[in-house]
Amino acid sequence: MAITSLAPEHRQLLADHFGGDLTGPEDSRYDELRRCHNGMIDKKPALLAACRGTADVARGVQFATDEGLEIAVRGGGHSIAGLSLSEGGIVVDLSLMRGVDVDPNARLARVQGGALWSDVNREAHAHGLAVTGGAISTTGVGGYTLGGGLGWLMGTCGLATDNLVEAEVVLADGEIVRASAESHADLFWALRGGGGNFGVVTSFVFALHPIAEVVGGLVAHPIDAAGDLLRFYREFTAHASDDLTVFGALVHAPDGSGLPLAAFVLCHAGQRDVAQREVQPLLEWGEPVMTEVGPMPYPVMNTLLDDGYPRGALNYWKSTFVRGVDDALIDTMVDCFASCPTPMGALLLEPFHGAVTRVDPEATAVPHRDPSYNLLIPTVWTDPADTDANVAWTRETFAATEPFRADGRWLNYYSEDEPDEALRAAYGRNGPRLAEIKRQYDPANVFHVNHNILPAALPT
Image (tube, rainbow, N blue to C red; front, side, top):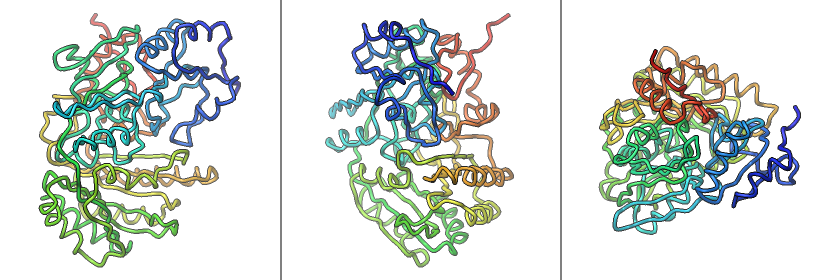
């Protein structure tokens, strides 16, 4: 396919009023800069516009709409579905905008839209503070938060989006607004779980919490113990405190051997003595082959899974909330994992409990507030020759979960080929209200390179 390129005079129209960096197919760094986290994505935009501030973002959006170019927005570039790029369009790239400013007295952090969670963790930790961030520290703040934002601290602090108190947004017409509970309240509601449908968020203000240290890590067992481990996990997590988040995992050894393992991955955000007492049953269960659990700074906890999800690796993910972790589901997980074709593949159970479940389902755009488990199939591999086998295994494993599925799906885990009904499962009861707000703020659906919400039809 021929790469679309802007005529020099058209590119100059943007360059004359743009403080950032512009890169097109004719530039030497084009192929490097158009790559994103997921190596499966190979889109070729006409222009990458790396913005240095909100004025650049507004100018980039105005230029794209004037020129009739499709707009994609890139923060951290972690979108599994490849929504950080546009084929033949313009990428409003926030990767140069990674500033984090912490007010320790107010316990607030203003975070630019291109920041990664490692940036936030570092600055907040300097003041003994933290907020729910991605389970992988290289995840971008923007897409993660707009999609809800689950992570290690959600039982204590709620989702990332539950801690959002203000957002600066560039709208489809280039207008810059501040959205909060007091201003543009409907837009503020929609941003907290409605994805990138409503504008480009150039900065986020988060409420922070006094969390500096956690007790966390990994307890791994032979794969033969997987069924019993997951049954113990089910009983243990049913009564876990808000401060303790435990993922039940079928994984491969991180040492490169590819040895399949069953594991607890845990994080306790409470006082050290309480944490050590509450995690003790996880340490004492069975006969582990590896136990690496102890006190650590929260930013370190946030990096423990990073090596399993390297930039440029190929990714194809599926997920679904499940009605419960019954024996039949456990047997299905164990059976499916036995045929996993990649040593970087996994099956994870993520518990929704504590603070995240005490928010009204209509208080934000995230409808998933019942105590439950999300089953994630994050398939990762490095050799393109293995793509067909890994995609097929992921789809087959997901299909096998059908008898156990609840109604909801987690927005940020969607792959590129999800059907429309899957999006309805992500937005749930809040879909109609999101469509109304979409009509108010983006009636022409300018921002559609996302998990798209169509603007509600005008009343007849």
